Length: 173
Image (cartoon, rainbow, N blue to C red; front, side, top):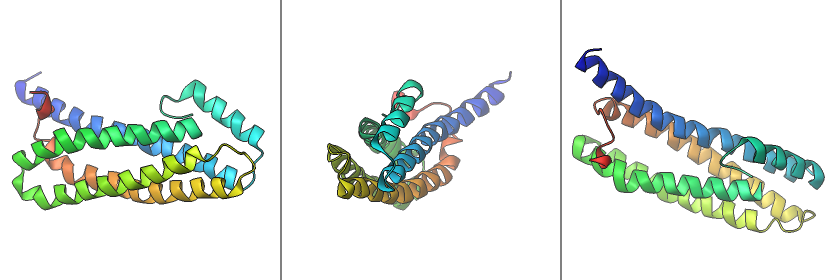
């Protein structure tokens, strides 16, 4: 393989790695939203617990209450890494994207608040009969999902041209 081909492959790997992490977030968010919807619609607690137990055996990010909390922490951490590592590197490599990076950082703050809402709602699921808590979690996950999915797609689209010029993550220098 030529140096040019290796560099192109490394650049594609960086973009694919970002998309892979985003795909995990999307998939787990779909699962949590489905469980929250089931809860809000009155699915028996025993069935919800059974679904959560099934998640525990196959998913590294989720478990419903525990799953939501882990997901929220994962997204918080992912965005934190982007804020302190990726975005400064993008600003340096492509100063013309300063306004877009500002928007992405604003999105992260909004998502952080929405994640906090999901966490607060998940902590209130102590009583399986508490319909208000169930609906609050379902609503919080729906709002988070709508904003987060739009953010992930936008971020991938606007950062792809920069990531495709890199052959390694610049914050590991």
